[in-house]
Image (cartoon, rainbow, N blue to C red; front, top):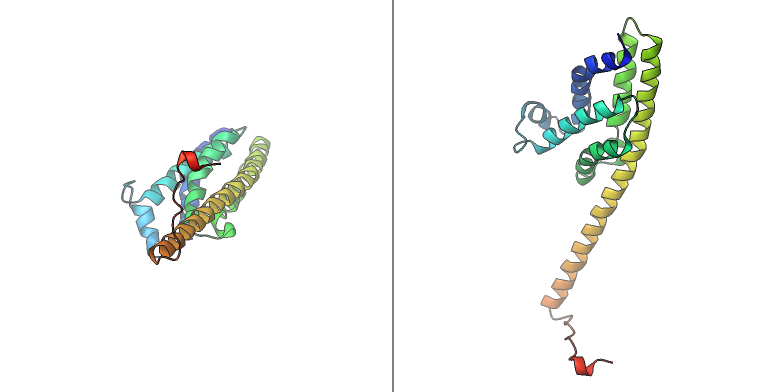
Length: 179
């Protein structure tokens, strides 16, 4: 069996394991909901994550990872993690978890060819690349969230001060009065 065939054969099982590991970050009560609810409107997080993990699996196990497609596949998953205020180590641990799934899956395989080992090294390298990209995405998302929160707070305080007549709007000067 060729390396591509091996990874294609393992896709359903490994993505399912990967999804199970990822959703363990959430409260115990939510796990069955994420796993068993397939309606994307009732379970948007589970739907986005399942779709993203399937895309990521295909990209990470490819001979050569397409960096732009990898970023596009990572983005929705990382955005969800960032919005939910997970720490970076928790939000991004799903990538090292996939690394462990691949490594343990290869160890359990009885007949590992040299071609499979070489391909597995490429997959692990792709995972490392994805980890760095995921961190960049996470940082930019959290930065944007903090900027939005600061703007919202600033606007709230400003409106409160205006409401209490502690600050007044400066009226626009007529065009002939401008310097």
